[in-house]
Length: 133
Image 1: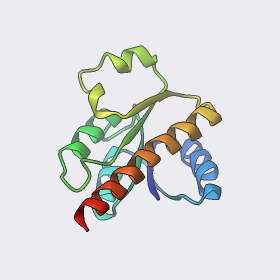
Image 2 (image 1 turned 90 degrees about the horizontal axis):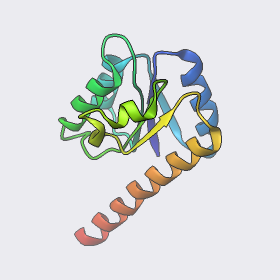
Image 3 (image 1 turned 180 degrees about the horizontal axis):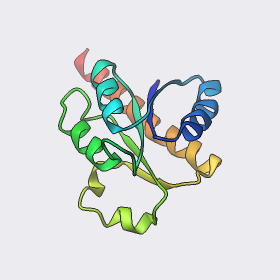
């Protein structure tokens, strides 16, 4: 499973990579929303982990752009924020996010969320493959 982590803080990118890589996930990183959007258009990913507040293109704008790109539109988004979770849930774009976590991340909750979202992706892939054969 390929995961793209988009966060402007290197320490967060490194932390998430160190959590996910030993579990067998292939983790790519991007330093801001613009970088993340470019990488998402170049390679298929099974999950996007996106930070809320970043320079050049914030996480909300990146999520909008991904959902408007057919190649990327079905990929789930795990949205991370340092702001109050309720304020993110009140955004008009909240329906773009499959799950929202607040930072600092709780390791167990984070890993559980990643696994849940990727299991849904696997289930959909298996279903579409069985229907097409």
